[in-house]
Every structure is written in structure tokens, then in C-alpha cells.
Image (tube, rainbow, N blue to C red; front, side, top):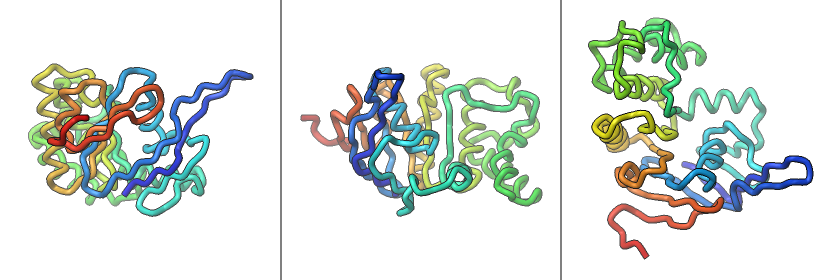
Amino acid sequence: MIALEGIHKVYRNGALEVQALKPTNLIVEKGDYVAIIGPSGSGKSTLMNILGCLDIPSGGTYKLDHQEVQSLTEKELAKVRNKKIGFVFQNFNLLARQTVQSNVELPMLYGGVTTPVRKDRAISLLEKVGLGGRVHHRPTELSGGQKQRVAIARALTMNPSILLADEPTGNLDQKSSHEIMALFTQLNNEGSTVIVITHEMDIAEHAKRILRFGDGEIIEDRRKGSVRL
């Protein structure tokens, strides 16, 4: 579970202060599927960086699975990022010279998982995302949609508390975009907590809950199927 209380972020450049994220309260329960939508500069990317433990808030409290994130050392934060948060990025972030299987194994290598377990889990996850026949291919031999499937498999390797996807369809065509979102829906139906950052409403509509950002704050929070006020 994610619990934010009064979380905010101010960037300072000399005497200049920019409030990128206004004080925000948010609870995301285990097993939810949330889309965070808004234009550039709305605060959604700042929130994503805080949720992913990639940036430290200026104030407030962030608890992940009842653990207060701000109290953790950098080493402990790295462990949280490796084991509790699965990242999926717009640009895939795959190693071009490594095989698909090796790319998926990477978080497990850093996490100290033994070689036999790494290989079995990587192959199993690649089968899960529909790439069981591509384990020995290089990323350069894959389409954009296939590369994102590899990235999703890699994000799942440590059985994370959260699957955090930043503009996961930004480099994909419409067909591939909706296939990737259908995969997130499948993973959520199987129990994964999914948070997707996007600027496209048709992508956000795949989620169960939509948070719309504007000017550094949540301006709408609605469940799918609810009436928009």
C-alpha cells in the first residue's frame, strides 16, 4: 500500500523557488490500477519520481508497505527500488548487446538471485508476456511493442509491490499501445498494483482509477465508471 500525507516538492535555484508538487494526500491500496494524467509541468512526473524513490520530497510523509521512505538510507532506498518497485520506462532502457533473457535477469542479478532461479524466472516471465520464443534475440531484433513487453517482464522479476510505468506507450503505435495496456490490465487482474503515468486520456481509461493533475496538484480523482463532476 502507498500512503502519502502532505507530500510536496520545491525546487530551488538561488532565490528562485518553483513548487513542482503542492501538498498532496494520496492512498493507493494493494491491487489497485491507477492512471496519473496531466500535461507537461503539471506535477505528475514529480510525483512519479517520489513514488519510485528516485527523488526526495521537500516535506510530508511517504509510506510504502507501512515503511516510512524518508527514514531510509541511500542503500536502503536502492534495495526498495530493486525489490519493491518495478519500473517501466518510455524508452525501454534495454541493453542492446544483451539477449532478451539477459535483460530480464538483470534486476535479479543485482538482487543476489542464484543463476538457475534467474534463468527459470526470466523464461517464465517472457512466456507470460508473450515472448517465450524470443529469449535469445537482441532488443534490436524486436518491435517497439515487443521491447516494452521485455521491459515489463524485467520489472516483474523481483515480484514488486508496485509496477510503476512512466509514459509506457509514448514510443508505440496505437495498436501496440493498447496491447501493452491490455497486458497491464491482465497483470492487475492477477493481483499486481499498477500505476501508469500518461498524458493521453484513452490510455488512462484502461485504469480503474484516474488522477488528473494540473498546476502541481490533483484536480480530479475518479473511479472508472463513476460520474465526472
